[in-house]
Image (tube, rainbow, N blue to C red; front, side, top):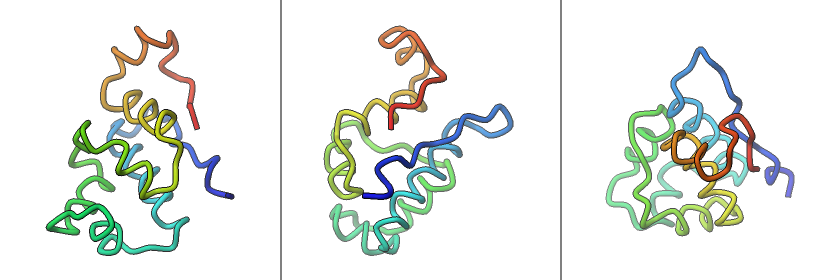
Length: 104
């Protein structure tokens, strides 16, 4: 799939969650689905949660990482590592030793 290689870009000018949100939006758009369709696939009561994530104003609950990975057609381990890199950069650095390396 062409969007398997989509990865968030590291930039010092943007907040990490905003960068991650851009990546999540790119994954969703690569699937050709709307925010509402993704919310339906994930059984979310409000599609606006997707909008909040895509603008960096929210966080995917860790218990739902696998559901999101599947909905966005991503390998769950790599998807979780990317989320960890942006949500918890210190933990990512301790585990993997490099906070600048993209996993996708």
